[in-house]
Image 1: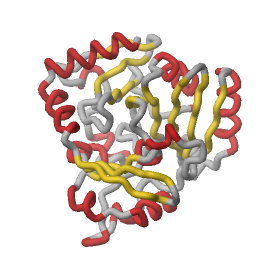
Image 2: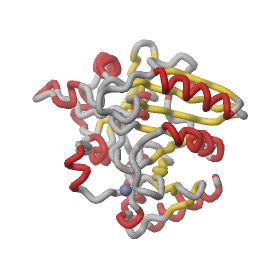
Image 3: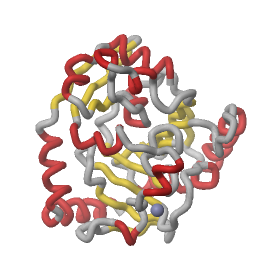
Image 4: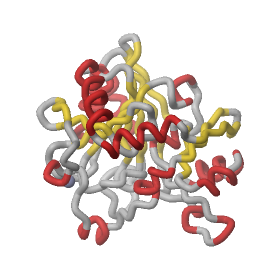
Length: 271
Ligand SMILES: [Zn+2]
């Protein structure tokens, strides 16, 4: 699987202009580091992410757009690798990580993790040089109507090196059945907001030396107040798993320059 994914990147970055340009641009991307509650967070100025950060995910907008994860709507240049019959691994053409995958279900079916957490563990095991992540339908997923995971290369997110990361519920095991049981217990204990289909969650999972690590972030809000604020108070930040894991994405340069540790602390607190 790892060889196939490397070949996929090679092929796509040679032959797909959009992906080639965006991965090249990522090499020049501006970053800064901030100390937030004793943890080191990176801020990345990444203009191509405006498409996700500003995505309209209300039911009406979703209904009126063509689903960009359905196979018939994928760009002509996009190639994929099958995983477990019902998923496809795709190069994400709007990357945050130097290697960034989107892994949609082949079927157009809503973003719901409960019955798919085992697939997430299997994916992490097969792609053990990646962190696999899941954004709930109201927690940063820009396609809440089409199930998908994402994955980004290791050695990028600060959370990977911390055993006591800000606000994360962290579970570890060498035994897949135990991981599934622990996940189920936590999932069942989390509150469900009215009209929601699952507890609001961001989830990150990786596999190292025979052990799975999963970090769950319980969410209260989809987007922080600064996202909607007018004028100088506005910060276009729509936090998801990557931000929770320690890399805050600012699609606008003014926000990248302006954002301080207190802003990140405030956003984490709110969401
Ligand atoms: Zn779809």
